[in-house]
Image (tube, rainbow, N blue to C red; front, side, top):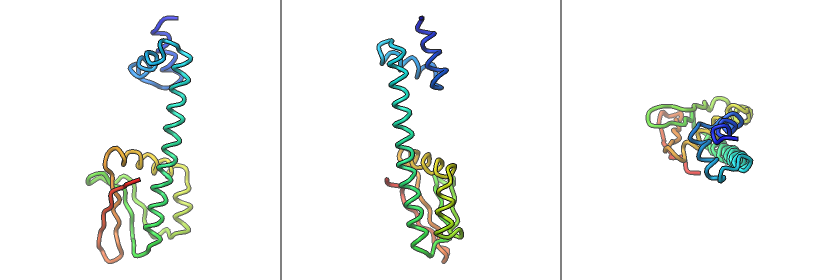
Length: 137
């Protein structure tokens, strides 16, 4: 089997770019099976980390809303709002909203991105004040 065929298999099975597939194959010493195993483990580790960090962000947002006097919590990067959660859903409603799979995934992605790209929480209070908090997880 040629190197290109091995790269094509890695790309097809794991959705890698040519560079990623070539690097994975090189790191495995040309062993296709080892490259597949290594890349699958990396993907599993990434998904686990995403769930853990997403859970931390969800917990922090719940804490902020439960403290009261909050009308809205936003996850922002610069001036752009990435995720906005109105406090009007209430603590019990928030649990349902945050437990939904799509929002948990978004929260996880936002959290991982926050660790790399300096995202922050913006907390809008009922009296009109706004507080900002860097996401530190």
